[in-house]
Figure (cartoon, rainbow over the protein chains, first blue to last red):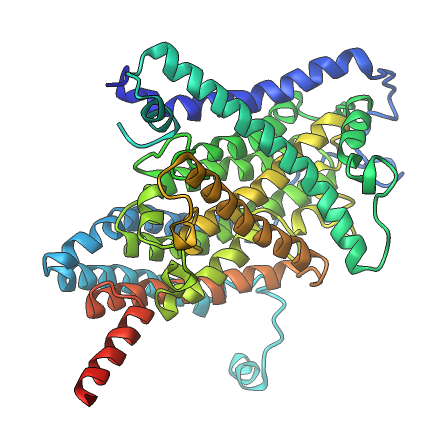
Length: 143
Length: 372
């Protein structure tokens, strides 16, 4: 037998480490080759020749956070579906496929409900507030 | 012990494993793989420029080496001798680790890419899940690169990149789940072992749902790797060059290298999951060492064909707007992918995991026998 069961993770660790070492190595080698003449203007953030005004770390469009929230729900869904998907074939072979299929359907139905709700609320539209109302809904708003 | 490069090489020489041998084989295999990938990354930039030149009826790089094929080496030399500029108002620590995260995340995915039945560094039993998890590091790297630069262009690019990459991870995950349903396993060798060498035994033609799944996976993978028409994070006509505006020299080079290797990785995963992986038609080579070469050839041929399609798409389609990007992901790809998942599960339940061709053949032979 091989030394331990953990050694199947050697490539994972080694490749991640190579990623770090490649960047570090190239920057250290480059340190002896490249010029180094920093000055105040050169180290400014690039804004096409204008003097930068203020910091870029400002408040940001709320849409990005809504997307992240919807994503988390679906990512957890994916993580929860993997074990079910991996055993579905085996259950199907012993004739229990219908039960598992039903549970998959129920699970996805709940999620689809969620995405339909987001869609109806307009959270999937990127420009929510600037939507031009069609005549019917504009009429409703007036009333 | 699972089947990987170590057990394969040891079985070739009929030797018992010792810690030294294990480390030696892993070391050599990782060395070869990383070098090949760096070469593929470098030649990827060359291929991109040459193919784009071809599409636009230009010459492309043609000065350095025959047909300009050494252009990527010249680019590397230029990048390494460029001055290394870190903006004075940036967060220096995050600025430094952003390219490292990108490159580490991409390289770590190579551990489970099945190049042939013998040459797979490690066949983790959670292979696909591991791949999805580790490749998310690239998104973190892109966002950090944009955030740490403290430049408005970078910040916009980084925010776009983060939202795009996490959004398109959902269709990718769900399309991969359809294949996991068919194979009943998460390990790459198990996923490939359900397929054969001929196109009609590939999972892409297993049933109509997986056929659609393949295209959803491919489109979403393009978006995950920030390739055109989804290259909004680095949209050069809008954001200068997006999240890596402030990066110069080798730091920028590693972002580019990571992107080109990632394109190769997602093409390789598409081949492994949908297009039969390393399986060879006619059983060429058999179980001998030559069979391994045929398998490697089969895998790389399909992967490079997809790689060509990726570049071809880049120079064919115009870039999307942010709102179009988001509505494609959430209003089209995700619902269709969910439908595919349910459809594939139902197909397996109804037809006992038989593919379209198998069903057709049994129907034909059934009607043929009654006819006689």
